[in-house]
Image 1 (cartoon, each protein chain N blue to C red):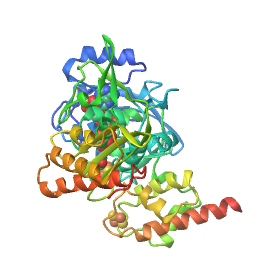
Image 2: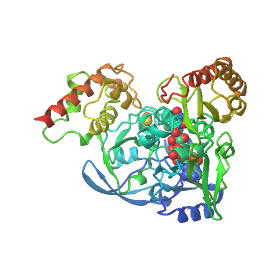
Image 3: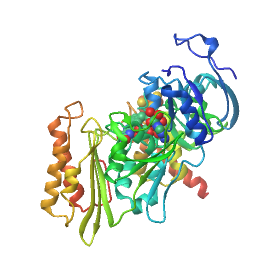
Image 4: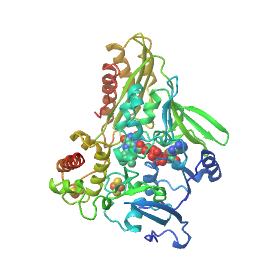
Length: 291
Length: 176
Ligand SMILES: Cc1cc2nc3c(=O)[nH]c(=O)nc-3n(C[C@H](O)[C@H](O)[C@H](O)COP(=O)(O)OP(=O)(O)OC[C@H]3O[C@@H](n4cnc5c(N)ncnc54)[C@H](O)[C@@H]3O)c2cc1C
Ligand code: FES
Ligand code: FES
């Protein structure tokens, strides 16, 4: 299969990439890892006239922590970089648990976290993780930079908040105030498959009390679901069997699953509940394995 | 090198905008004129004429088309040929030397790691990338590294054994 014809540019700076996007109008598209875009183009679900490949733009392949602990993930940081990251293993349990569960090793060598957020697939795992962590996306366009909270960045299935001439340059995870814990659990039919159900939990605790909580759901609605009521049920006290139960109940209620070849709506809702209990009962153990 | 395209029925061949790229494949430097929508797998199979890289699903699912780009295994049906510009590609044809099979190839023979052989080139390249960074992998490491490569025949048991065989042989070579 071939994509339909397109013009191809591989600029060497962000400024040039933004100019190309601006001139290209609605028919121009950024290519990062290409792991969602190329398959769509081959199937002719996407037929952009201009591809602006950012792979030759230097200095975008980083992920690093600021001195205060804020994490920044550049637009060319690949899933595989995050899977192997010691920084994540030490300081970002939810992200470290999710990274090895994205797609398969071959896709992980090219696909990017930022590209995954931009793609806004309801079954994309990173969006849930970044939403649960209260992260944001930094966009750059002809008018300058702006930060968009991840919860507002995903505006619907396969839709994001970027203007046509804006590039997402990095994802930002705020520094924790308390002690960070959490994890990501994903039910998949086989290794490398998209989520039947995914649950991201990100907690911060100080003196045994939960000071920040984020819970987000993958694959159980038209787009990533921020289970804010569920998170609120955990705030202000220690984790107890009762608060965990309330959070799990609220998360299951927030899910809007549909029955399909991956499972019935009822089953998926049940799995949301189970995953929330499992993640919280081990008090934010940082290990994550496919269920 | 001239690249010949299939007639895909929706355009005149004359007005295709071509781009010149330079890349290395199995150590040999090449220059090619490619249309941007040409996939890396097409460039390798039809342009360079190396047909060991197989096209299975053509939908980014099976890993039959796996090649190494700068040492990392990727799906060549899901990368544009123009993106190979300035990069180094290794295909299955790059494993053996003129006189000797690569230990991975020997391992697949010794442990019956293939039946129809369609997935084998991709399996060996994904395995090579693993052994390059982890010379002494566990069975779990091998299974994890090959989890993007599907095999419809073997049930994977002998593939894993083949890779472990190759790892042992490579270790004994570098020790001796
Ligand atoms: C077999 C297979 C299995 C997969 N399984 C999973 C899975 O289990 N979980 C999961 O989360 N994902 C999965 N994916 C998707 C994968 O994670 C992709 O890498 C990801 O969705 C897109 O990232 P990319 O860098 O490849 O983006 P691309 O494919 O390059 O781009 C995707 C979209 O985002 C836009 N875009 C990309 N980067 C930017 C940017 N910096 N600024 C503005 N717009 C941008 C593009 O224009 C395009 O519209 C799978 C993919 C495959 C092929
Ligand atoms: S042919 Fe490329 S993944 Fe199947
Ligand atoms: S040997 Fe036939 S597909 Fe693997």
